[in-house]
Amino acid sequence: MKPKQIQLLWDFRGPASEPTATHFLEHLLQYLNQPNNQDIIHADSGTKVTNISLCSVFLNTSIESLEKLKSDLKPHRGVYIDDSTGSA
Image 1 (cartoon, rainbow, N blue to C red):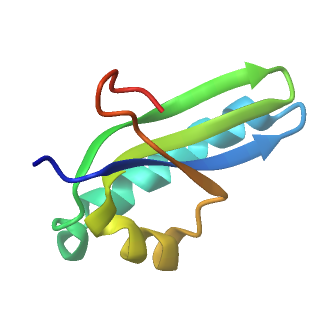
Image 2 (image 1 turned 30 degrees about the vertical axis):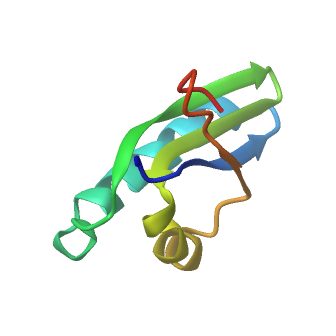
């Protein structure tokens, strides 16, 4: 059985939400590439623009990595990823 997947999200609001989210994504990728974080299981990451005032950074990860990510990065929210469609 495949481990349960979760999508963690960090929301950025306001007129500078998209460049702020893009900048945060760069730091997120740097964090994931640090030697002490090589055990974090992640499948996909990126940004989602909802509208001109809301942009989110997402990280699809396994439930096993959730506690470390919550502790270190404090995501704003998370949703389970539907196994049948691969979407949140």
